[in-house]
Amino acid sequence: MKDYKELAIKAYQIRKNILVSIGSGHKGHFGGSFSVAEIMAALYFNKMRHDPKNPGMEDRDRCIISKGHAAPALYAALAEAGYFPKSELMNLKNLGSILQGHPDMLKTPGVEANTGSLGQGLSIGCGMAIGLKNSQLSARVYVVLGDGEHGEGQVWEAGLFAPARKLDNIVAIIDRNNIQAMGSICERMDTGDLASKWEALGWHTIEIDGHNVRQIVEALDEAETVKKQPTAIIAITIKGKGVSFTENTAAYHNNSMTPELYEKALAELEGRIVELNKDY
Amino acid sequence: MPIHNPREEYGKVLLELARGNSKIFALDADLCKSTMTCMIEEELPDQYIEMGIAEQNMLSVAAGLSLTGKIPFVNSFAVFLTGRAFDQIRQAICLSSLNVKIIGSSAGFSDFGDGSTHQTVEDISIMRSIPNMAVIAPCDAFQLRATVKAMVDHEGPVYMRYSRNNMVSLTLENDNFEIGKVYTMREGNDITVFAIGIMVEKALNVAKKLKNQGISVRVVNVPTIKPLNRDAIIELSKDTGKVLTTEEHSIIGGLGSSIAEVLRNERVYIEFHGVNDEYGQSSNELQPLLKHYGLTEDMLETKIVEILNK
Image (cartoon, rainbow over the protein chains, first blue to last red):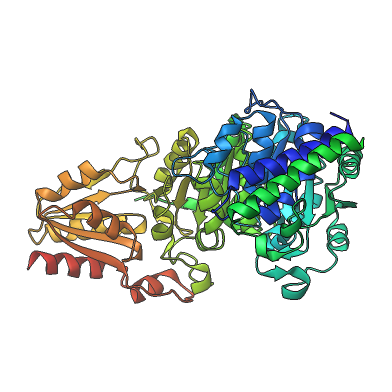
């Protein structure tokens, strides 16, 4: 769907799914999941060629959530797309559930790699990109990374590797929300200007507003035109975006909501969906 | 007895297999002239990927490759693969039983010159602790060839560790090899010696020597440490009632521990021979180093006699 209004609404549907899956009274990674909602909407409902009825389709585009703690965002998008019934969202982290705390490729339809131990997803994506090219498939690989995740050395290993191998079928999308588990990234482990770093590594680098679906789609479109070079999209986002009390704080990196706060969040998200329907 | 270099044979057999199977890839982290994957790079550059000095990236890239139907062989020194990239092996590869083959070159003390940072006596222990991982240590260059072939046919993660240096060939070129089987190299009924890698030849030499003293030693090669053939191990231990395990590896967590785990409910006396929970060091020659750590025929003989005198 190229309809930006629909995508913007989808992002809030995804936020609602995230909220419902974590629920009240249980801890969950609200912050880092809410911040990638527009990115997930753009990937699953605009850019990626994929088929929820055929998750193993050989020439499908792949999405890896390297920042694995945003699993609720991934599951929210997969459920919305029809990879499994929405009712499964309520089972997040329950014993025996197909929805694990961090993505498990054997347990959940649509999950492409095991992530959760940070820094590994981009490498796995590079391996897929090489294999796909070798098999002469045109499928593309999209890897969503966190900014705090850049502390892991392996991110830089993959960062060096992809341009060296001229992998133009992989895109790194960095969720630049400037907050990690224990607080502000600037204060605790300043990763500096990420755009210039990715540029220096040799990636075609685009900086966008990570909550503007048009900008996300245009960046993804641009990436497809770049040859012999991978693309890095630095998406400036707000951790916890979409719910007033989860925005811009480390407090909701991994936290629980009381029933009252849950209802407040739900009302805010539903209200936003109504507004968006009117807005356009 | 004929002597072959396992590294050379590894490069050759991988190349032979890669020629016939375009899904096979060799990945290397700037050590291809040591691991011998340079042979693949030379002849089949499209099936070789230079990863640079980045083992973690290498293992995860292998995981991604396997998810597109390729069969990646990941190569480096045993110590670096199992140490630096343990998490990647565990999380991406073994957790989902991906079809990645991990080749630990220069295992044990075989890189005698470079010293302790390049040697490992913990790799078998580390790798076998991961669910879904198979762990193999061939006893000679021919068995290594057979192992590599079996690895291609085996669906799932496998770790193979082997020596850098020449080995006496104890098996024959077309000998049977199956992952999971144990091989009785010499029959005997006073004591059972379970051995792997370079210790198999030493155990056989000691057995031959002790025969002259009227001692009958059964020598069993256990190339597949995991999955361990429980029934065979028990059967081969019960009648002698006395077991010695021997390995170029720590006595913590390797072959000895695996065998002891299996025999824990049996009435068998079991003793370990291996490296005594310590690091390696540099040496300009291999033999003095092995002697320093007691990985010798003399030490094996002493241990066997000790056990029999109990």
